[in-house]
Image (cartoon, rainbow, N blue to C red; front, side, top):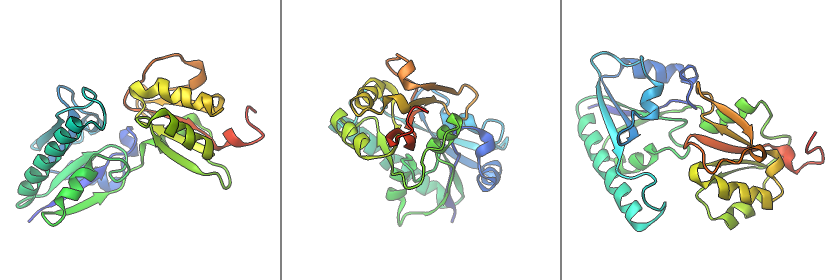
Length: 243
């Protein structure tokens, strides 16, 4: 009987993959990864040149990404069916061999693999190798400590309603906003309403070759890539703001 091993790939730079994940990926005979239909997939791109020549690849293509409203009944139905199907297929494969599943960032930090893990319980042996999460790579790209002293850090999803974003932005010291993309204008408005916009940064594709780091107040773009994060360092609620 084999094992389903989910390896965290870190924020995007292959040099930030852990030694353990690197070893498992290079030795794998079956590798599965998520991707949008018609795209190579970010996880697959990160490990380019690392896979064995005789590896069998299993591309798990999402049936929907941004085509339907996030959280709609149809969106949930399609994704649930997708995860059900792949959990069954991976469990069948793991009955005889090991399978390595690639996951950007850390698998248990908003990672898609979590939806498979819950479905695989009792059906297959599962092992998870931690990875550096994407937001860590982003705040190191800025070069400013994200938290100071007893700062409270809140991680928000850009898909939240604007008033919910505002409420959390007003109560926390440091902020990380994920799932920005086309939600960027809403995130920006909420930050401005909360008085946090001057201390906000936008990091696109953190640690990757085409990384871009800008102050959010200095850009007027209507949306950003999926792999983009908005960060507000803890000094945003301290007297030294702006120094």
